[in-house]
Amino acid sequence: ARYLAAADGLHSPIRRSLGLEKASPGPRRWGIRRHVQIAPWTDSVEVHWARGAEAYVTPVADDCVGIAILSSTRGGFDTHFDEFPELRERVDGHANGPDRAAGPLRQSARSRTAGRVMLVGDAAGYVDALTGEGMGLAFGAARQLVNCVVADRPADYDRQWRRVTRRYRLLTAGLVRAGGMPPVRARIVPAASALPRVFAKAVNQLAY
Image (cartoon, rainbow, N blue to C red; front, side):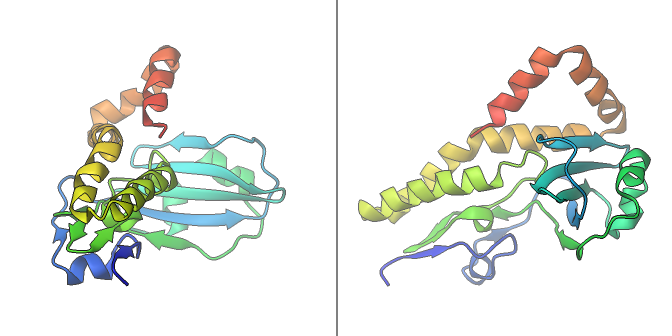
């Protein structure tokens, strides 16, 4: 093959083998997810905010919801879930599938290209899962990768990747930093409630 699109995940072995891995700045965060056999009670994504973690509830099927917890401390799902007593009470007693964990979430690369190898998706670099923009960014970057391959200009891909992900990277990194400071974190939800239009505008800025 003339080109290789390396989409081999958050801890990309190809990124590491090519010497493209780079130490990641900022706090280290982990994610853990569980599917619970219960009918969704909303068609939206719910975000539950606690002192040291966030829980994201997503409808998966007519009889299933996914609950993902993001935290700066490692630990099992049930340990973190204790921070969300109302949510825990709601799903308590319902069957669940195996837990899936990932982290540290923040991953950086020196470049997205090495000759004719191009990193795409989580392998290209990742800030955090709190915005849920991973798939949209991956598809957007893949479009740029294809354009560079068609033009036979793989060296352009890193610049294009930085351009299409810049807003996401800056806003997400800012949110993670703010959430890591207890006095600021405690004010995020009250501020969003008091200024819904400002909050909605910030969320829309993250939409790819």
